[in-house]
Length: 229
Image: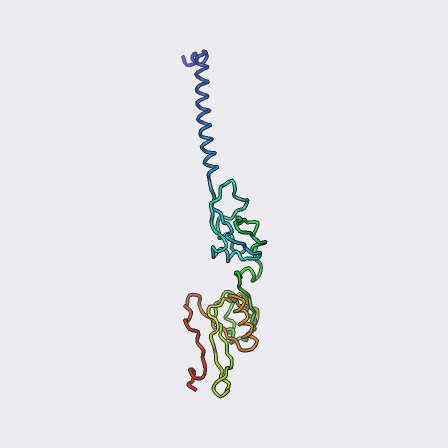
C-alpha cells in the first residue's frame, strides 16, 4: 500500500513536502548554530598599557596592572592569544606591546638570566662579601635576607662612633657566585644605596624566612645599647 502511495503523483508531492520540511528544519538548526558561534566570545589577556620589551612574564602574571582579561568575539581572537596568565611564567616580552593589544604566545619568549626576574623599576646589584657577612655560604638564589651596614658616625666631641644599622629588610637574593651575592633592589635609589654602602662601609646579610614580618622601625645598634659604653 505504502509503495503505491509513493509511486503516484500525490505520493511524489508528499515526498517533496516532507523533503522540504526536513531541509527547512536543517536550515534552522544551521542558522541557530551559526548565530551562536558568531556571538561566542573568548576570555583573552589584553594590554592595559604599553608593555616594554624585556618585561618579565612572571612579573606580569603576578599583577594585572599591565593587562586585563577581556571578552573578545571568537572571530576577532588572534592566533595564539593567551587566555591564562600562567602561560607567561618563565618568559619575557620579545618586543614592545602597545595598549589594547591582545597578548599572544608569539610576543613572548623564554627568559634568560636574572633580567627575566626583574620587575619594572627593579635593579640587580652585586656585592662582594666575606664568608661571615654572607652567612658562611648558607645564602643561595631565592634566599631572603636583611641588609645591615656597619659604619662610623660622629659622636659628641668629634669622636668616631661605630654603629650597625638595618638598612633594608626582606631582600631577595637572585644569585650567588663565590663571594659575590646578587641582590634584587626595589628601585634605582635603593641600588645606589647598596653600591654606596658596599664601597664605603661593611655589609652584613642576615638570613631570614619569607613569612616573618618586618620590623616597623629599623634599628641602629651602637656601643651604648650593646655594652652600655
